[in-house]
Image (cartoon, rainbow, N blue to C red):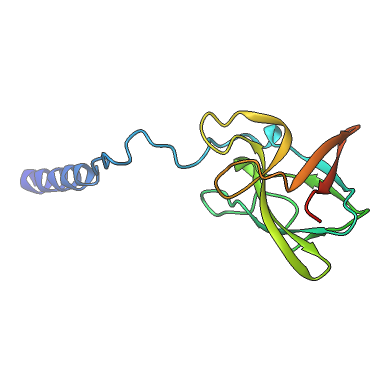
Length: 157
């Protein structure tokens, strides 16, 4: 009985200690995703399109790291055309939303809207910013406050 107990204890210790993988030195100290935020801290904007011709179409949002649900709004495929309004526009916990710009049925360009810096320290922006894939402002969209909403215009129509 004593030998059985020792065997079981040794097995548990071996399995438990064997699961501790060393940290890859190349990854030590790196941040791959911004810190998760509480839902109450997420931005939920209202956008009113003041574009003359172009429509915005949601291309992609970010999915929570556990892939349990999409935490951005509006949904992929939704469009915002001249004179229309989007309510509850949200970049989710990672504060970004990829939008395609269309002039009629013609694809114009893609931009990513950020509500905070796309790199550490993840500082929030006062207004959303339209950026390219390198995280640099691209000027494709302009956001101007309109009371509690934003007028959103495509500058490259």
